[in-house]
Image 1 (spheres, helix red, strand yellow):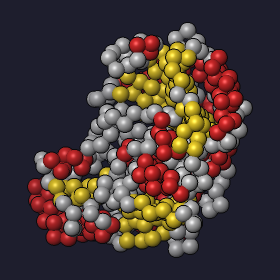
Image 2 (image 1 turned 90 degrees about the vertical axis):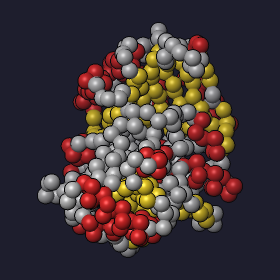
Image 3 (image 1 turned 135 degrees about the horizontal axis):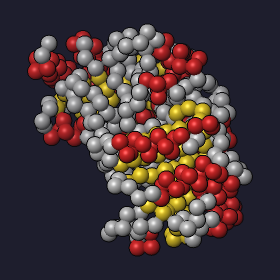
Image 4 (image 1 turned 120 degrees about the vertical axis):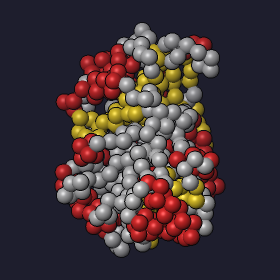
Length: 461
């Protein structure tokens, strides 16, 4: 079948069966639907379905199954996928409903909802979700990958607290999956990623948290080569109620960057303290001696403003990133990592680390597929280049090599851009990967579901 014939067949079938708009290549709706924060290797589908409801998702997947083409979900926030060529892209942005049950402390969240949507819906009840550092991230895609929360060391991964998931599997059938209806699929969906169907809604727990102590210290580390290691030494002694991270980058000398930061190596130490807010300042006090403080945003804040803690960027860009999980950080490796971050390059790069452990290291009440819980830290190296360059790849590889002796595997949530099968294999324990491939082959034997981090087939291909 020629590309033009297939495209016509797909468009006609979709327009006859879905209630939301269907966008053809070259139209504004198609361009909007395939574009998101990530601008590397954007999707190029034969059609974009702007799903009005879960039934539109089911109909789109059914059409893909009948015609024999791939189908992918384009979620909100950072969850925009890449690499689909032809086939059907389902834009879930309209599926943004959030229903809070304050008595049971749960929220049912549509595939198009961001964490800020969930945070705002839960806050009037004195509740909060296990949202991440960026409130613009899609709540569902984040949870499918595991979900490293601002309160992760206290409560665990977001996926640990998912109660049920609604999805459309590759055969075009809608399913509600929980620990009783399909234990294997429920296990796989929580941490195993998007290979098992197009999820339309997730129900998960909320927690009685209305305020945090948190924010960031922006340190001038230009003449403080041990700043990253200073954070490590401090973090290792902190209680489980505190989740923290650190990043390092050279700020460009340009308008929009605060004058004291321009051209300097900035180490940003960010923390979220989920214990009694009045105890936060004393916990943070040792950080002020790591390097000169250029800006201080630490304060008590309502959870509705939790995005200010890490102050992550939400601007569209082309970027790629390593997401490694390590069991230890040595002072020597951290000093070399900081030096890499300080080296002048023709592109922007950021290295950052997150402290794990605590509840993140403990198995949940109902097991899930999240890998490498024994990791103590997550390391990410982001490079902003489009197109990709050899120098950017070399930087990520050099940073990863510093921790080779302590690397446990890769993080599903923190690997940005398309990944190889070997990289997906490194996200899970071998026995878990075998189980995931068996479940993948059961629910999608023809590999119709397209995702950034596909679970390999048990039989290859």
